[in-house]
Length: 293
Image 1: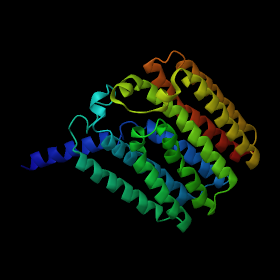
Image 2: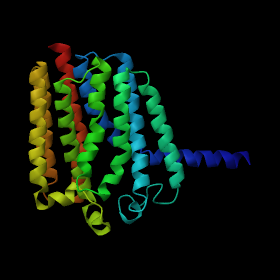
Image 3: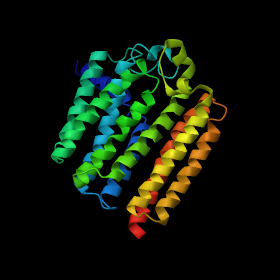
Image 4: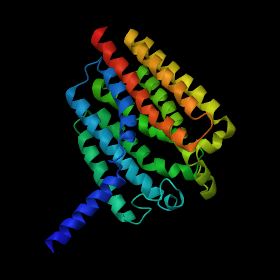
């Protein structure tokens, strides 16, 4: 009897772990990099230790919560998509009610962390929670769910400025816009993988909306996004190392364009994954600039 209970607990833990995508940290990393950009800029290279800890853990937990509510929202779609049909809810290993409970727990723990911050940041967290919870349902109503994802993923940027400085300066909003455009680009690359299945089941995405101009539009968005990061650097008086990081990121953007050129699914997914290195390149540039300039 004891062994059976232990096995049950182990199985539930495994399924919840998979549902929250803790086995696939790429999403956490892509969400983490712009948060760190904001913390380093707002803290002039020396973010407050408590703020850093809260935001680091908050990113991990809210990304997990986002994955859970996404799979709950897509529970009727995922079984019909090759890439997602083995997800815990789609495969019947986790019940929708369990997913909602897990989402609530992850969100409440995240909110508990935010309560350690100032009132301004706490107030902003309600907007972030709403964006994260509503994003998965956008693909039913608009061809721009990737832009909405950018709004949700990027919200950590103004929150980081609020937590660190109790205000959101112009540079914070410019950085937020840059992150929004970046998410729009990399999530469109991700959506290109599922484009055929999405067309069959009626799911909307920018990969469908952009059509044959997808590469061109993403290229233009990448240029604008990098331009915004240059403006951020100018406003903040950042130097050589920061711009070297942006140059490396620009090279990665060109490489991503090469990967998606023929719209092969495996290479589109590889381009999506490559955005982890894009985010890291910008962050390394920031860290080095504040250390040595």
